[in-house]
Each structure stands twice: as structure tokens, then as C-alpha cells.
Amino acid sequence: MQGLSAEALEQVASYFQALSEPTRLHILNLLREGEHNVGELAQACGYTSANISRHLAVLMQHGLVEREGRGTAVYYRIADESVYALCDLVCGSLARQFDRKAEDRKAFVRSVRAVPRPRQ
Image 1 (cartoon, rainbow, N blue to C red):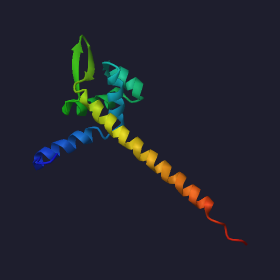
Image 2 (tube, rainbow, N blue to C red):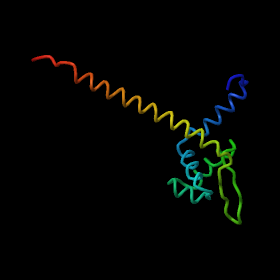
Image 3 (cartoon, helix red, strand yellow):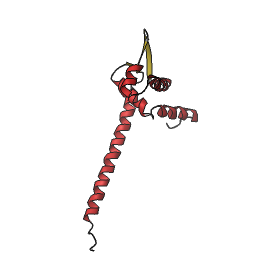
Image 4 (cartoon, one colour):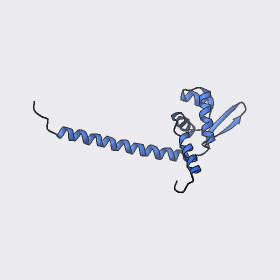
């Protein structure tokens, strides 16, 4: 991001904002398996078709998904597979943070147990 203009940074932030919604991440995970229509995505996510359509519009606006009409149905698929590498990178980072916190908690519990208790 070094050297990007303020306008470019706004676009980067907008891209990350599109990924900041759990429903959109769920949609991307479903599309990782293959293309789906709105009804299939709505059923899998447990939301209305209208809600899923709004999320798909945001993902399309950012070039993450693309659509293809087939007769009366419209199917969505991933347009930029690199989003999965980005999400996997973030998930890996979060997993390492959780592991460190778990180790810190274990160390704390061990140290608390090692401290002699005052007599009453």
C-alpha cells in the first residue's frame, strides 16, 4: 500500500469493507465449491433471496463475483480467486493469535497455581 494515493487507499478500504460482512464471506465460501443461483445461496445461508441479492451486488461491484444468465435463472461464480488467498492469510493470522493467547492463558494459570496461597 506504500505510495498509494488517498483515492487508491479509499478503494482498498472499500474492498476490505465488502469482505467485512459475515454473510458475504459465507457466500464466497459457497461459491468456492462452484457456481450457484440466488435461491440456492439464500437457502444455504438462511436468508431471503432479496438479502442475498444485495450482498451479491456488493461483491459484484468490487469484482469478486460475476453473474451469468441462463434462461430465467442467473448463476454466480467467483470472478477473482485471489480473494481466497487473502481470506486464508487472514484466517491463518487469526489462528496464530488465538494460539498465542491460549498459550498466554496456560502460562498464567501455571504461574497462579505455583504461587503459595496465604494461610487463613
